[in-house]
Amino acid sequence: MAYAQLSETERLQKINAIVKSIQLPNIPDYTISITSFGGNGNGSYNNKKAFDKAIKKLAKKDGGTLTVPSGTYVINGPIHLISNMNLHLEDGAVLKFGSNPTDYPLVYTSWEGTFLYNHSPLIYGNNLHDVAITGKGIIDGEAADTWLQWKPKENEDKLKSRDMNHASTPIEERIFGNGHYLRPQLVQLVNSERILIEDITLEDAPFWCLHLLKCNSVTIKGIAYDAYNKNNDGIDLEYTSNVLIENVTFSNGDDNIAIKAGRDHEGRANADTPSQNIVVRNCLFKGLHALVIGSEMSAGVKNVFVDDCKAHGYLKRGIYFKTNRDRGGYIKDIYINNITFEDTEDCFYITANYHGEGNGYNSKISDIVINNVSCKKASGTAVVIQGYKDSKVENVYLTNITVAKATNGTSVTNTKNVVIDNLIIGEEATVPTSVK
Image 1 (cartoon, one colour):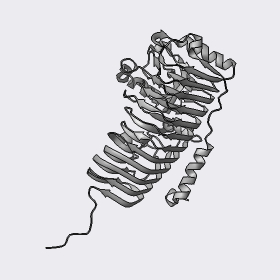
Image 2 (cartoon, one colour):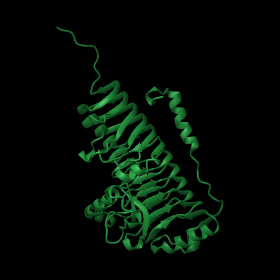
Image 3 (tube, rainbow, N blue to C red):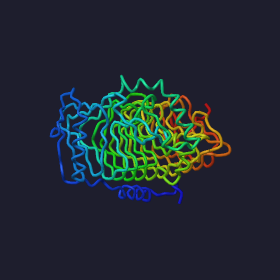
Image 4 (cartoon, helix red, strand yellow):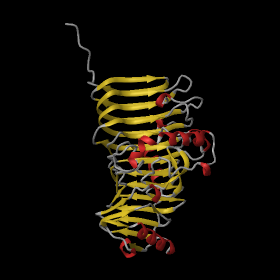
């Protein structure tokens, strides 16, 4: 059954099935405080050894909760999480990370869709199960005056990583880190399952804020952002399945939610792990773009449901699906319902020609259902859909869409079966005027 044929009952059943399948972490009933291991929240003491000791203690106990009381905890180096662990930041607790690159050892990670070894993300875990980060505290990357200075220097390494991807260079030979300029993520979990991220605030990230890479069974709820550095995406899901994102307050300098699935040759080689079965609901958007799929999506993205969200500020684009002829893969079975935007450049932008790049690997965009969306203003174009003559965007259904004011109405090219019902840009036309 095509998604456009789903009744409201069937749509809700699919959402409920995804949410029901997601498992919360099972954390042992054992709690320790960072202060018991020499932790000091005076804003100047280096707490790196205290965190390492506390986590080692949890490992001996097969897990538990590490609490961080109110205070500002400087940490010169990363926190590496373990399985069966909850890092709980109490109200008033701030983790403030140092930015000396030599304090962040090489770990297995990825950078813009390519696997490699780079400086450890500031909070990191690989091959974990049952892991949580909770509480009313703040994770502060302290990157505006430090890591951010790498942005103008990154291009050579970025291109090198993409060349390694295209050449299928063994991952163990893709060594970056010291002497290179690829900024680390603020929080990243890799190859992990049963994850809970709840109520924390993420600030001032070096690069992406929260990156889930090859993860499964993820709950993200009640978190907030104040992160306006370059490339400060809020949530990046990559090769990740069975995810609930709800009640998140975004305020970040790039994509609020970006759903990805690897880049180019490497992404297509991982086609057995698309990003799929994702529910987003009751979120408050503010940043560059609200909901993005791509541009790294070569393994495919499918079964995404977005419900009952709104924006509380300017967005360059509200809904933005982006791919090109380098990617391959697909975007399909996307269902968006009840979204309110304020000022945008473009309300919807669905393109298979991102940056005009690529050759030989068309992506397939199909089966997109967007219902009940309102937007106050589009200073660019209200609705953009761009396919290719030899790879058209197919089966897009737009119903009950209102854009109060737009410089341009629609730009729809190289498509098949785009169905529009109740699309109003500007003032709604009433009965025709008569000749007087």
